[in-house]
Length: 250
Image (tube, rainbow, N blue to C red; front, side):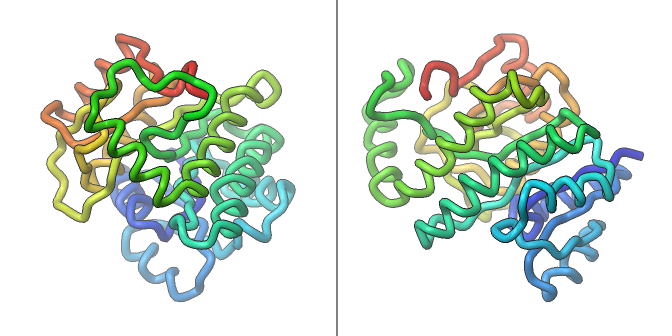
């Protein structure tokens, strides 16, 4: 039976991941920060761990990793784009500490981080060549609205990629588009996508679970939005094409 450790287990996508993995027989350890979230995690089949990501050092995270012995670590935490200070503390600094902790613990190399579509160095790198006017408009609106969140994600994702010769992780960056509360469709568009298509959170969770199962996703950053391709097929197509949407954008 596989053990999976989720940082940020109280988030909506993380809850769906917990439910899906638990249903497949995983031991899902879910790091949450509020005691009142414990019953919800348990109801989904997860095992809650009370721990503040903001207050945890690398060694604190290493201790949790060693206690849970995960075969996969999933970073699903996020400050929600509200307070810039808290966004930096969680989405940037907390994420990077979790990468260092995964490497230092030495129990697993498999690390999946949930980021966001269009996270990129917009000032110094060219825009994706498949973008159209609608994508440019959406990009400008999102960066103007939640720039600190996108910048924090960029810093964390860049660290994951550029520092991996030191860490040696088998990482995947999952980059969903705008999230909706709509019911799951089981279908997505992945790889070189357009930004205006929303995606149900439950489909993002199912996509992450499929990424976990497909070793060919290691080392890739994958954009995913709502679409018409069954999730397993969409992941397989990205793997066949080795499509990495972060490469050359940081």
